Amino acid sequence: MNFYNAKIADLKAQGIHSILTQFCDLHGVAKGKLVPLDNLQEWVEQGAGFAGPSIWGTGLGRFGARSEYYARVQVDSLQPLPFMPGVAHAVCDGYAGGQPLQTCSRQLLKHQIQRIEQRGWKLWVGVEPEFFLLRQDVQGHWAVADAQDRLDKPSYDLRAIHRNFAILDDLRQALTGLGFELQQIDHEDANGQYEINYRFDHALAAADRYLLFKLVAHAIAEKHGCVFSGMPKPLAHAPGSGLHFHLSLTDAQGRAIFTDNADVLQLSSQGYAFAAGLLNHADALAALCAPTVNSYKRLAVSHSASGTTWAPVWKTLGDNNRTCLVRAVAGRLEWRLPDPSCNIYVALAATLAAGLDGIDRALPAPVACNEDLYQRCAQGLTMPPRLPSNLQAALQALAADAGLVDVVGGAFCGEFLALKTQEWQDYSQSVSDWELQRYAQAF
Image (cartoon, rainbow, N blue to C red; front, top):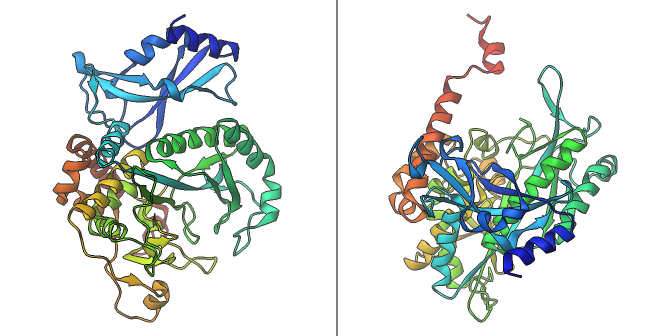
């Protein structure tokens, strides 16, 4: 019995008849199709075929050999989906014309990982997913799914966890069944907002796992009549959702490259240089890590109903300082810019590229911030440089950062800039309820 027949037999013994071939588009949204398990060898070696132009950001045409997007199954990723009986989930890489597709975001991250592997290093990433549970009424109005979730400061609200335990426990069961090592589930600082933490992993596995997390969460929320939302800031006067990356590098012997316990921040010279690279490219990274119009409603210096805001607005490094863009904690770096609307493969690829640039150029260590920057801002004092205040400014910064674009991938960034520029133009030309309320009868 060859490898594929043995794999098919093993999955059939688990009741599997079909494979959900899953990749993501430029926006980081999961896409795919169901294919029969019996043709596993074809899905691995050739890939499941899709019309390339039907997927956002491929850059593929409507005819010819390179009009087809082929999603090649990564056979080691196959595992049964608890909420889809008879179906196994598979992570896929994008190909066209028999070659890795330059606009496939997973291929972009794999390329950056190859760059650090050539140095004998490995990037470890802990992802912190924050999200909202929402409902939409028949008139199309959105609201928090739990109408009783109304505390002014709802962080760690146990009554909300009790009311929504059926959803959260279904999530727990599905995620643990898929191999997630859960660490905590808590109510966050906005009404209807939760966070689920699970164990860190190497960069590619962490990105794959986050996309699977979202696939599970969408399905479980829908089962309970609500919506899992990764919108960065659905509530105007409450904190938004981040997708913080906890980053660490290890060498071939497993030693932590960022860590120096003798340093006041427990960071090595390479840890400081990596942080400097992130700060140096932060404006361009904003476009890829916070890629929607709504992202910049989160990244704003604004009042929060809870009395606390966590938005990482200023380009600084701090010792366990959640008001900074980069937080040093226990010899690793927390990159606080990304939000759940990002394509995690691209956000990680660009983050790694920027950090490596800092190391390769031996950028000087950023001065550590040892104060609450929101208190400093309230006092009217001089502030550190801040991130772009809207998507347009972030896109302009990305377009101007030719070095980062080239290393991350010019083909992908070209598609990204075109689509996101159109998104900004669509937003700029839209007329909101706020405008109608303020101006319709004013003049």
